[in-house]
Image (cartoon, rainbow, N blue to C red; front, side, top):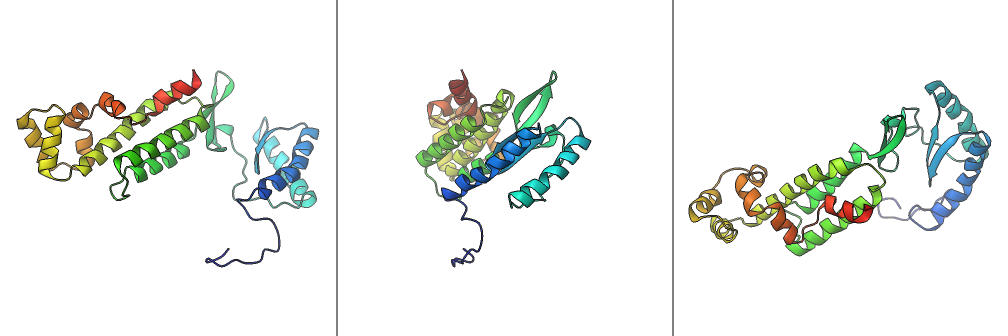
Length: 244
């Protein structure tokens, strides 16, 4: 489809349909067999392929030798822009990164995957998306569960608590935005246990939304425990549920 108009395709199959991955795996199964025959260590998911070598020179030689097989015998086109020789710690594969710990390869969440996650959360906790409170909670829960289940093979305990703190700040910010008027802020701050004098002072604050979200007042009135009781999700707790 181009510009909303269907066009006849002379080669390949439409992406997104059930036939595309089936045919892709059938074709690339021959590539798997060839790599095994040559004694290479590799991993492939659909059309994403990594081949492991002991040195850069060996990796360059492998790429030079396997490319003619893929393009010449299987008649598949290699994406030259995405194909490269690199140290495994510099590579992103299916959203995962890699690092070496005591001589062993370990999985981590690639920084780019964390940035994409934060972009999604920003959209959901944005002021102009028109979501109600319940719908926002549901979407955040979907993202937390989907993301943790996908990346649970990675060593990610150490990134989840900072991620939760950041997401809670976004939640506090969007709640503060919803209390748009001074009167609304004053009433809600009092309901959450703040004395009248400080509630009035903070209801009239000129600080920006993000700074207010990190203020001692919102950290106390919209505490971690209160957000949890309000059934806002968090990454760390869900990670413990699915990995213990």
